[in-house]
Length: 245
Image 1 (cartoon, helix red, strand yellow):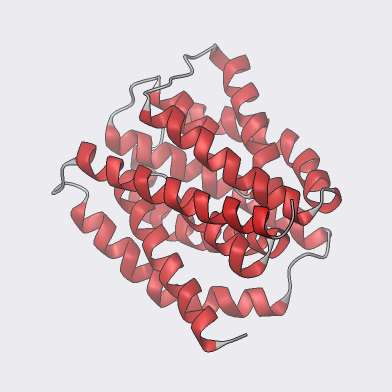
Image 2 (cartoon, rainbow, N blue to C red; image 1 turned 30 degrees about the vertical axis):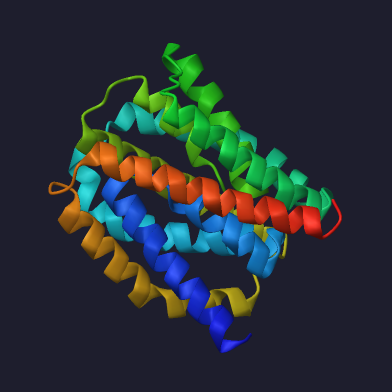
């Protein structure tokens, strides 16, 4: 792999870790579209899951005491049910079509968040249904976050609880996603090497994000994140169209 390509991936990993540490979400939403352009959809799903698992593990140590455990557990159970379906989508759908679908999903969910869309709770059945949708998206596009983000936003959790609960959910589902991807033979040693190379950059991004959590205007920052997400998705969509979707 070209040095400039590796450098670009390290930079993306650092920025994604920063965004997630500061806002509680956005790692896959930010990193998946440009990675899909660089690596292709299938390797992107694998690498994003591996990087996300590492980042969530490091962040969980800091946030574990704030987790809303029942909520995280029921969401995770639903996600586990949906993951095998998402894996089938990943392995069977045309890569260019999947890249286009990734970009569309990012745009739709980002616009939904910007407009303040909320999925109000339906108790345990609602938790499981949202988790299921997230699980399908996880192993097919590596973007499991949007349904859960919108759903938990509607519950008006305190910011620290919101960050911690999403982190615990991502960590639990990330373990299962990696097991499924490994079983399908999609994890290559080159991708593992990229994860190892990305660790210092991710740690820097995560450290800065945590330090800034209590110091920045959250509303202004989230608006900036939305702009980044939309630009990133537009690049991925343009690339898919150029390749002849």
